[in-house]
Image (tube, rainbow, N blue to C red):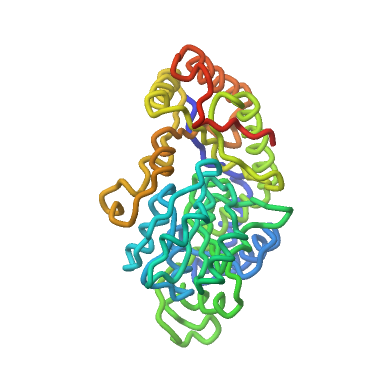
Length: 377
């Protein structure tokens, strides 16, 4: 059976070495030495500053919203994992939906202003599947309308545009370090803040509002800290990340070369370096998508309708707007297996099954206007 994803596990010997150090020190949490070391090493590796580690990706979003004093409503995308909308909604902030660009699958900047309300205080785009959105246009709207920008960059570990980390975009960029991500700490996440003062406030907020030096309670906060045990996994992982990223990028490239012209892939800008977080493809219609998903399952290949459904058709979020392109894509999208241990022969087998099914289907015998070929890079 080929899994849709598989968590990468670094050297057990290396991981246990970190754990033995934790046992020797007896320091398990509360900004321990491994959390501090991981923070510094991640900033260096990713090319960022003001990185704050937290206990999971949703906590990262939570922290960004609180540290930046977001209230009222935010403009965001319905084509995303539910956390992008559930975190603000949980705190009484309405996630107002703007539609996506049908080619790159990210929040369409041209749809943002019509979704802005009198109480809107932020724009919250998602770099879908790790594909960077149009920061120049989003930032211009935000500056003109006096709004904060919080990027959900959950899938963006190691993603660069023009050689620079996209995690430096916006007032804050949030990352997930869940076990299924390219880089993980089993459970964990981080926020990269633009402003030094906001970052220092966030460091207090993750520990009940206590000053990290004096322990004095200086503002409201909660417990969002990452433990030493989780930081140990991150440190062990980080040594292998060049290999993991190289492997995933090569497998994603193989998928694209095999499937190009027969499925729709995201439009990727030529100066973008992705991380191989996911391998999403879209078919001509929902029937074709379902049929191919069933065929792959029959042949021992697990796939996932990720993201489906579009959040604007779900009961808790349908009142926040309607997004035609998002709904149409969510009906046709399928994520194929992609993880570091996957073999090129596995990718070739999956592609052969997909192409074989498409070649026998009259409904996709010729490419429709809804299909964009996979990019060449």
